[in-house]
Image (tube, one colour):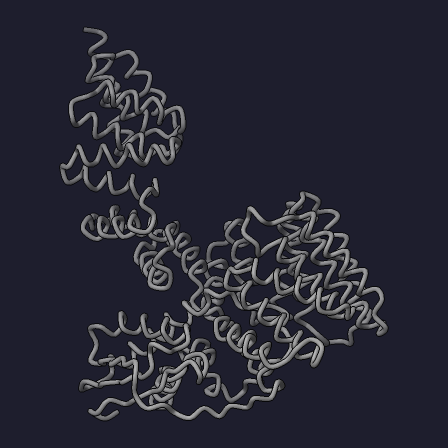
Length: 567
């Protein structure tokens, strides 16, 4: 690359990742070996880099990517760009034009790149103006519909919504019902993915008012049911309404002329009923529906046909087996699912959870790693892998995974809490305090973070501040044993042994762990309540699995109590 800045047009008229996809594609062409380590994210952002890819289907795919996937893509692409930047021998300027008018995917990725490349030799110059590249626009509804299908299939929902609205403005249900419905349901799908399910519901109500076409009303009934079952805010979800609309969809499917399509549609819609049955605490009934659906699908499909449909039903069955407590059968189903649809990260996450529950940590770690590669960079897979790494004593690996989670999703509180606690354990109090305060900036009353920050401040001698933080933690979670124990330690250090005992009474009532009893015994000794202290030390010593230093301290404290009582 030259010293003069390369310029890339980011205007949203060029679609998702406009400009920045060309920038990443140019790096990929220069560094193919490096690009091969980031294929999933690069192919998602710049699909022309994948020579084996097929165009996205015009119709709705079987499953949709979650909207948060773009944050994962941005993380992976930024890691790729940073690795490239590390190979540069001289500074490089890169200019991006029309940033203010860029698609949401482009702005999100630019934000991540700016942070990730801040200390690199690459300087990103962002401009709202600049020359505009011509857009080859085809105003035909077919072209707009294809673009809509592509954006939905790739999970770029803001762009999909814009394309769908453009299409709806071109046609009417009276003049071109087929395209109007494609644009309407595509817009509803995008809005639901963007947590705007109420607007999607309005669109389906509009469709029912506009036409009585049985295929459209059938599809609208099913998607309306799913909005009520899953996508509306929790307070607006309505399982009775969901069942009503599923019944409508199944009734309309029974009237389809094509026998094969009748079976496919009916089985698909009945999976929604199975979902509701499982949610309602009727997993046995759900299992019967899924088994029956699999049998009917197998009867009408040719060998090897629609493997993802069959995989989806088997995945549903695995979830039902889990609800019935049959982990072995759930695992068998997931093994079959992955064999038939090996590119779905969701299945590896679910199987990893089963391996983890069965104590097969290494198998779980492998499945989380596959999910991270396919996802790509799923925060939950990184987080769960970090937990397993920590359980296996691999603190550095756990820390790396937790830092990745927060690089992708800074609002992931569980990862923030786990990372701060790891930093406290290794004595990195500056990093721990900064992390805790960053988390509290997003969730000011998060009890676990308040508790840990209180512990850090007490370690640094700020006892009054620590007491206040721990009290706030207990207001938020009165059953947080660590907060009772830590506040007791603060109050003991401030000279109020009676208050410390009161806090430890609460901790002991909540937990059978030995440390709260040891601490309470210590506070009771300060108050010269020797017999009560001795009971605490004795009961703590009876706990299994005590580490050697704690056992030694307990025995010494108990001996002191006995001497005091004897004297």
